[in-house]
Length: 63
Image 1: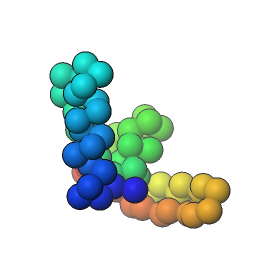
Image 2 (image 1 turned 120 degrees about the horizontal axis):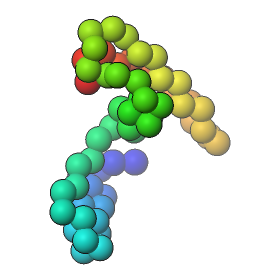
Image 3 (image 1 turned 90 degrees about the vertical axis):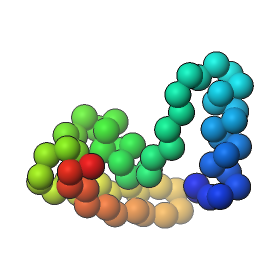
Image 4 (image 1 turned 180 degrees about the horizontal axis):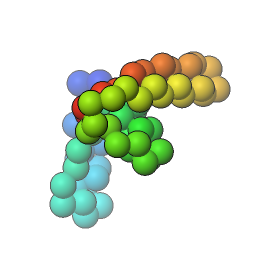
């Protein structure tokens, strides 16, 4: 879960281990990119992420 508290901690940890640039993005967008979907096109992509205790549904279009 991304929050005001955890985001800076993750950024700091990534920089400390040598990352030059760090970007935090929404989980559904990361899933779409990992699935090799072109989220820059003006068409909808539905992402359904079924986890151990939650199910998230998102529709992405043009990033």
